[in-house]
Image (tube, rainbow, N blue to C red; front, side):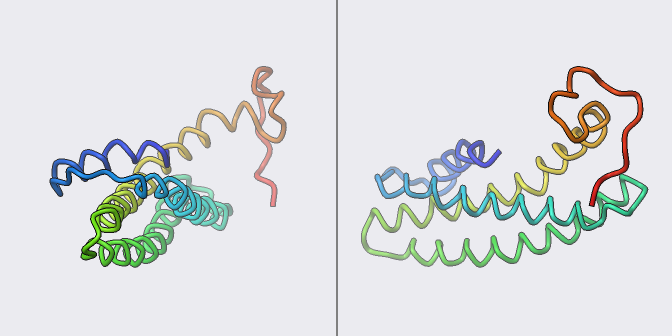
Length: 150
């Protein structure tokens, strides 16, 4: 999911911001966005785990999404602003890097708040009933699902 944000970011970088220069420095953004994306995914999954005692799955997802979206927004917007400040550089490589990284952070935020909850929903409703604590149980589905462990 993190790496899938590159395609919309490149489209945004090329067509919306009308940038023609794509420097080698932009490839460093791969490592930056992996770190930011993993942190955002961790925040969401941690909030999902924090509301594990909520019996209603829809309410649990709503509560987890509300907290995680706000926390991820705060970190993503500050990171995005810092990259936008790089876009004012007179050096084309630094300017290009700032614009591309800001678009990556923005696209990653939208992917985390839209795509990752869908992944968790599929896991909770389709995969978890067949695969609880041990991966080998995926192909020999049990009829009862234990409660979530602490």
